[in-house]
Every structure is written in C-alpha cells, then in structure tokens.
Picture (cartoon, rainbow, N blue to C red):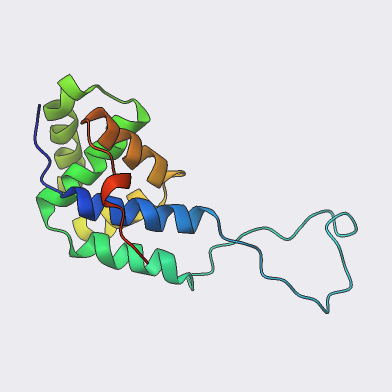
Length: 141
C-alpha cells in the first residue's frame, strides 16, 4: 500500500471544511417582500470572495508543503475515479507535473482544489481507497 505525504488529520480537516462550504445557505432578506416563485428564483449562492470557510481552506492548503499539495490533488483524483490505488504513483506523478506547470503553484493548486465540486466527498472517497476512515479522526469544532 502506498503512503500519503499528507496526514489523515489534515485531510479530515479539509473534508470537514469542504462539507461546511458545500452547505452554505442563502442570505435571508426579511424585508425583500419577494419569494422564489415571484422572482423566478434568481437568488442563488454566489462566491463574493467573503466566505470565511473558503478563506480558511485556501489558507490551510496554501500552507501545506509541495508533497502534501501533490498528494491532496492525487487523492481527489483517486476519489473521483481517475485511477486506482494501484495507479497511485502515476496519479501522483500527473499531479506533480500539473503543479510544475503552474506559474504560481501554491495559489493555483488552491484555486484548482476549491473549484472542484464535492471536494470533501472526493477526498473522503480517496482516503477510503487507502483503507483509511477520515471519520475516526474528524476534528472537533
């Protein structure tokens, strides 16, 4: 079984934060006098750059070392089904190659990961393929 450069605790933290990010609610404007059926349901979640969970995740990922960032991307790909556990070294090599192609690897890796829908679920699935349960070591709020 291959080894991960990023710890289960770090991945668990990101899974928790990604799940928090995925379940954001719309801001409620009690004074609007409108409802979704009247306004063609135009109120949607928008990223206005002020999301504290996204900022926390970005800061956390940016602080990881290069090997940890590479493993995080490869782990997400593994969870997405882009390869198998037997192809881990290939996934990791592809992630490293992609990262090396970035002009600003730390920032662009963050942008890439945070742009992936269901990031938390994919990371959890990737850990599962390693036989690691992220729930056992989930951080407490």
